[in-house]
Image (cartoon, rainbow, N blue to C red):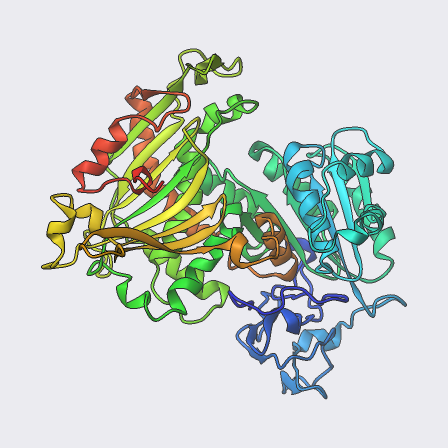
Length: 597
């Protein structure tokens, strides 16, 4: 599997991609050759290849840096055989009896990426630009095709024109931008159809086969559509458009239900047509650079890992704020609210990564196993440890900022929270008694996502008198700013130069844009590339999802059944006062209120 840190993300020529679950949908399940993972992607690491159709599913294959495309034929009694270049192949007895028919062009594989819901905002603003960025950096396979699929009537030329308006080039390779864009758009095609029509998906399948030209076909479907039609689209793709001789994977966007029951129902429905390892539940926050760097920061720096426990950490804060309201998506947001939209997924996933124990390896399943342990160890969330708010209209500088219920798509009597704060606790030996405070809100005073780790006070500090009665002034704090202006900085106490003994709080600062000249990739680029390569580390497993919903569902139901009124706060403010009382009850001061902020 891929490591958290690699020296070369993409190769300059064609990219080999992994087939760690080389199967189609249920009814197309076949034994087919395994392609191997790009050496540039992995280095010399273990690769575990597993498939339900392979009886030797627990075989571990050593990757020595070479690249192979097909498995050699071996005797039934010897499932493992060394190839000339040092790779091992996996073959089942059934594969000898049913050889795969290959065409003249089947010496290479192809990837067909279908964006279902191609005319929507997410596809236009994020998915197509991310795919172009991967192509621009030579990260996509040599043979690939991109299809847009939606109900809108559109030609290939109209799709290309729509997509071209949102494409941008990397700042360090701008000179050939026009040429690259033209080449990319030539690989983009459009198919109109209904999301619940098997006939329309059969037409898509026919068109995909024409472009695959007899090669081994691998297909990735990105469901950029409302969740109420996920199952219809998957059913039709399963029955009519899955790959016949390669892998088929489906990326599913959040929300994954509204509570435990609806989430479980969605999972059961998807698994009627897909295996778990074909479902890639995407949370784009897990693809952000600073979130992915969490494990590197902790596990590869000796100074941090010994401090990562209740003995030295006083509290952990996960803060998400946006300086705009729900303009343009009030109808959608009112159905979910800030807890479901941000806290139950983005912030809780970051918390699990932050608090997990050291995994056995960097394998996706080992990491996700540790995250699940954290989520299952969390104490039930009490309603007393939750504060909800809703922004109201506010006038500032002669400008009137509308309140949440001023949105025409939102009911006037809506109680949906646009702000929430919560105190959570992990009931295990490492984190017992340490409050994890979450805060998420819209229409606040700034835009920011960060993790703040406040360490305990120094016992018997010789310099307490220099800080007066406020010991928080002397607290060391590690801040990981996820966005904007990505940075990691550590607050320390320092003597101000001079003859007196005056102390100052200073930052040891790693500001990414100052340290690294390369532009940070968008989260969707990283996650799309991982999905193509079959790397699941940054995607959410079904048991993770169950554990996350089981934590928040009881509180959400209680808030809705009691029709709890949110505390109102002005548009552009720091949020409701109740959030500060909540923090104070746990002897915590929000870190984003400091003078240096």
